[in-house]
Image (tube, rainbow, N blue to C red; front, side, top):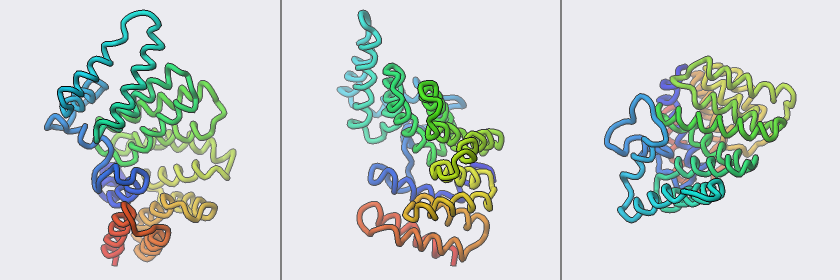
Length: 291
């Protein structure tokens, strides 16, 4: 199944996962960076870079906010440039996180830039994971590609500092899977192979098993996805992501009874307040569509 087809078919489960992982910061049916992709009133062009994203984001700022951002961007002039740039990147990250409703993408970017200057494995992987989480629900192709490129670079730099970090290896592989353009099978398989390197050496790595489950769903290898995700649920019975993905895989496979069973299992893991109430509503709609 091509990525675009999957995104249409799997919108429900992506919304549920975004609600779960991002909570009330992401309204239903809206992904991180969605406003940014069309902030100028039209989709971003065939290619996108930091300047295009900044222009789209800054167009929604107040004059005072624009002045603050411009002042920070122009403040690194002379002296200890590295230390100054590090401080500016940190300030910009906090600004986009705290002051703008849809500034998540730029928050992740500047966190990554600061982490590169610090050469901190922990901060590099943190920033990379921010991009990776957003990739799961980002269906604007140009923005998806830019975010995937940043995630890969950050994971690669983290691995330069610690080549034995399996989580970074899995994250790098997942960046290829979620960043594949139109479900490009070569990119998806490249990601899967990187994750398999970890899973074959350590079958108890549930992060690797979960990402291989995603890879099986992306590539249409449903039986393999079910095998991986079942392993995760067996070891982590409360893993809502694995449970919802199992429901999605069975639905895509055409097995309605098992899909319903796993959606029901997801409901048992959730309470009924806040964004979880919205998740329950989405799940009930999914179940009804299968009956």
